Amino acid sequence: MKIYLIDTNIIIYYANGSLPIEVKKIVNNILETSFNISVITKVEFLGWKRHTDKTFKEAKRFLSYGHVFRITNKIAEHAINLKREINIKTPDALIAATAIQHETILVTRNGDDFKNIKKLDILNPFENIK
Image (cartoon, rainbow, N blue to C red; front, side, top):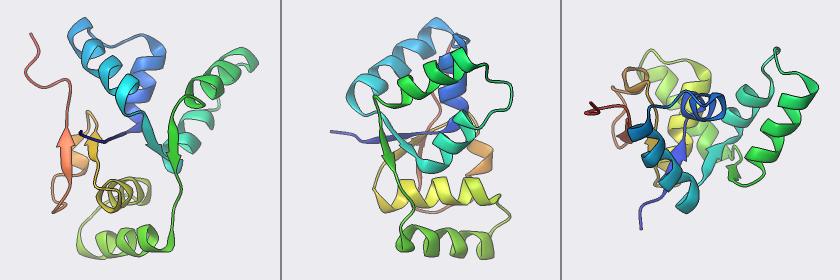
């Protein structure tokens, strides 16, 4: 069984209801079978300043259905190495390191942010849709 780690951008598109129908089918399947996120995604999604009290509660409830991977020392060390090797933002380095350490497939629309990372499997559900 494939295990996925869902990037923040996919969570935002899903929560906003802005996924094309073909992409929504893919994401729904992933959410039903392998709803995993990094704690970084939790912080980015819940920390959005434009949340109302209502949308914040809805977002928090939505994330409660998933599993949140925390940052371990091993993940932190891997992220440090990524930052030293390639030009990558800290949140992306931590998300990538989390995906690699837990042997998951990273689900993201921003594949270019992660393209230079070896050993990282990426699924862009927006690719090849009509």
